[in-house]
Amino acid sequence: MEMAAPVSPAPRTVEDIFKDFAARRAALVRALTVDVDEFYGFCDPEKENLCLYGHPNGRWEVALPAEEVPPELPEPALGINFARDGMHRRDWLSLVAVHSDSWLLSVAFFFGARLNGNERKRLFSLINDHPTVLEALSDRKHGRDNKSSADNGSKSKHSAKRANDVHTKNSRPAVADDGYDDDEEHSETLCGTCGGRYNSTEFWIGCDICERWFHGKCVRITPAKAEHIKHYKCPDCSSSKKSRQ
Image 1 (cartoon, rainbow, N blue to C red):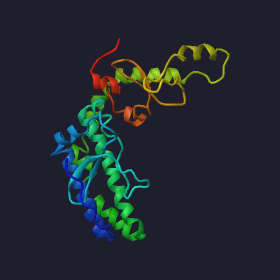
Image 2: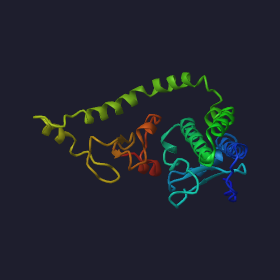
Image 3: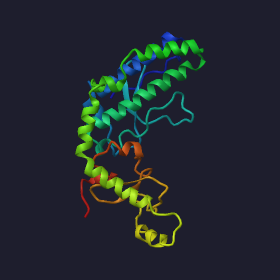
Image 4: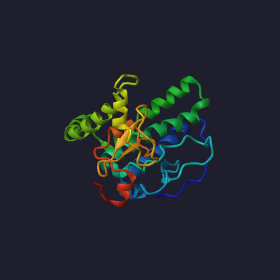
């Protein structure tokens, strides 16, 4: 992990903003490729919310987010470390890369907020001439679908089970004569983190080790992230490595 870069004046011209973008992008690409083992090690799920930063001096850093609100610059994806052990390494790195691309664009256009329309178009054109972080990571922009199909086939049973479980819970009628019996069936489903009862309006995810269920927000898993997780392990199972019956 690199040390934080010193604060430099905000770039104002198209050329300077692009130069800032290119340096930050190079740092993120290096973190996810050349320095990937070091980066992976820093993203310990036992630590607090962590972010991946690319600095304009070409250095990268895994660190806590800025405390001030609003921050000086747009912040990267928060808590990238929490999903690290619940996903295949390549899938997790790809997800981090996608969010890193989004962050790079947000920073560039934060600096470019005072540019006129033509200048912003020129800035985006310069940015778009470079491969994204995800493309640099995978280097298989057009061949990714084949692997994704194979991965989806291997996890189809697991995904179907979880999808069916969620569908069964969410499909109960809001108001019906037999609704009471259906509510009774799920009344004992409690979040393994906060202890809250099941609510069909919220996203839930089940641990494949201890088989407990959790609010997605309690374990920092969104429906989008869940789509990339083949075997989800809750924070307790990830840290203790023990299974519950």
